[in-house]
Image (cartoon, rainbow, N blue to C red):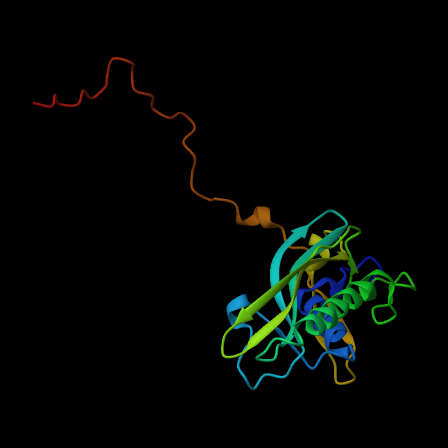
Length: 209
């Protein structure tokens, strides 16, 4: 395939899987999940500390895709809440470390300027504390994280090429030829000289009694 092929790493699967990998690789994290906030596993048998990723909107720019996520990090708080301060300290550090990996870490090749699975958007990030009481009490932080992945609009390559993975795990690309969408234009005959009603020839609606 030619070098200006689409960035396959810009897929949603790769971006969120990379984010999950960064989170679970952290030495203080024991569980990672994703989905809506209603899908956060707050049952008593969950493994904490937990990082939960909530997908947001994606902005498709000319040279990049920006994936927006809400990343929550939480841990159990004891019944008497005597460890809540420590929980907030630890979970905040986890989120800061995740952002740091996207800024200049080694896991994603950012220092090598590869940007394989994206970089954190160049801005300040706000972390908001929270405490939830369900079957158990958890505390932690929520951060809106924007991940930028290089991307270009390769419409021709996207539509004219197809790919399969061989037994060795290599991509095999096939040129499907040029597809001309104009060949599917509306074939209904268009009236060359449409009949236009004279201004006086109109239908008068009946009067309402």
